[in-house]
Length: 530
Ligand code: BG6
Image 1 (cartoon, rainbow, N blue to C red):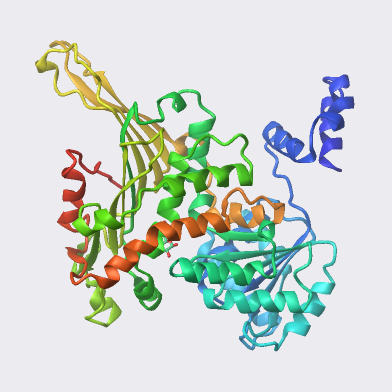
Image 2: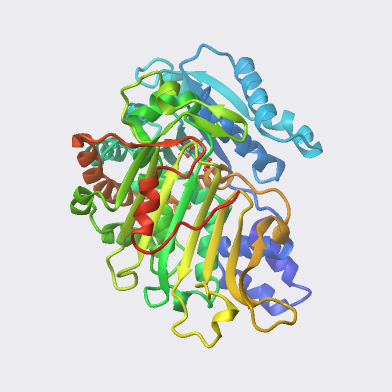
């Protein structure tokens, strides 16, 4: 039954007039949201076929198939939802379905619901052997897709980025890029501004921008979306969200793992391209942007773009070496024991690729003038933890005696992972007799405690947003290119620099220069504990 009719039926006994006017007042999209809230039921997406290029690769196995399976368990996939794996491997359908079964066993926790849904989910999957950079197999793909006319067609390019152009060109040439088709591309989109433009041109030659979905999986994380709720669904913070009340912002994305099996790719990227150009800058944008008029794709992306364009260029500061630090881990120890250094993992002692970056960024506009945004990210740090810390300004005058102790400034900590949640640190009186003693304590909202349940993976949200046609959590072309414009001068200066990255011991918080970067300003990194 269409959603509007369902709502009308639900309203009928309660508010007969409202039921009659339901269709007049709301769009179907509004009503899906209303009914979801009212009944906590999951609304199915429209019929679709998802074609995954790179179907046997890591992304498809670790993320896409498990995400789709989870949504199937939740009841969100309609009967007419199909998945076609495409790769150059000579597999038949049964062999690919066996791979999918294994991917799910490896990445989805067993449960009664999972067991009950598995056969049904696997029956959605088929496989076509085709070349990404040759025409072999494309007639078969086109023939198979002809059977899915009337559905949304999603082409997910889970391949190396150098194939994006070739695949899109064939999608166009084989008549598969019509109005019903959308294309999804993963980072890295280019390795600098010029190459990003070339990728965007190649994709854009076939698909208009409103059918291109550039994934930054950080935007699909629940806690990142919650940042929008925190800022724009609460009246409390927005009046304080500016340079008059905020002293500085810290964004940390720390990983405990090294480069694992990805050293080949990572060595051509480094932390600046791999994490800062996309994830870290997107987080900065969500913190710094103006409230959009509506939570719509272009409204949100327009505001993020303004932030990216307001970032102070780092080129001249860089020459003084003050606002950016790059590091590379050497052998050290972590909780699990000794770990090798980056160069040994890579098997090349001459690499100057950075595995750590700390940056002092500034957003040059009225709201943020003079408020530093300190960013740091790295591999082989003490723990896997990502946090945004909003540090408010100190109180202007203390009415307390010195014996009450030091009055710390308030701090809002948004924990992205693990243990997603929000802590607002406030000064409080230590309970008990003995006079006034003050202490910084948190108002603590753990999402797990507040909401319970499983925390869905970012890809569950993002893949179905593509089917829904909602681009809000995807990067627009101009955003990607504005981010590269800011990153490019740093890359250029590094490529000419005589000095290699600063070394840090695996299992520590990066080179000491990263601590100096913030302490020079009389501030300190907020301790993050996983
Ligand atoms: C990816 C990077 O985009 O993000 C990886 O390429 C990194 O190097 C990963 O490990 C981190 O993602 P998450 O979701 O584990 O924080």
